[in-house]
Amino acid sequence: MIARTEAAEGVHVTVGPIADVLDHLPVPAQAVTEARSLPAWRAKEYSAARALLAHALSTLDIDGTRVGKTAHGKPVLPARRDVGISLSHSADTVAVAVAPGRDVGVDVQEAWLPSPGMMRRCCEPRLASDLTAAPPPDRARRFARIWAAQEACVKATGEGIAGRPWTIPVHPADRAGAWRALRWLHLRDADSAAAVCCAFTERRNR
Image (cartoon, rainbow, N blue to C red):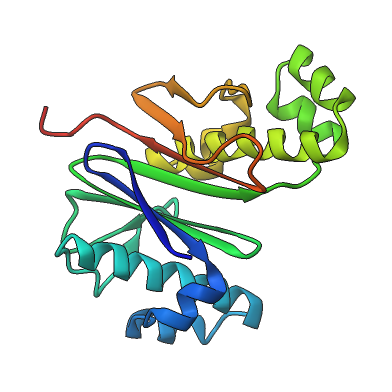
């Protein structure tokens, strides 16, 4: 089921299963062409993300015919640089965010078990210790929330992995937080099998 929500005023996030997106939404011609050079599994994710983005933009009467990207890989609308966009996929789920007048980042993370090294890298010592002691299903869900928030933030800044997302302080029990000029917000409950987080700036014209 494809669901749309507002993370904040004017920050629109749409999430859905990849299968549902591809069954019900058309894939833009540009994405069809670009997907031909990708492995089959990657082409499926890419096509679903672009179909969902085009759908989200159309509901706001924004032309999403062409999508470009910055040097760091952040997606942009060449014809509407004032509109922030972001895409994410994980396992069977895809998510997009559209935010006129704001920078925005969205990330979806299916629950997965991190290695001890990954937990030490992304969490402060006490939190890493608590996660290690948690039952595997809880550990997987909690870490997904941490990584989704960290990833959403560096997507919003446009830095990507160069922004060192693992250094951003996030606690899995927190529903919302702030980092630099961004606010971030989890859009699913802590016991969800997939974490969805959106990060965004204040309106650019304020």
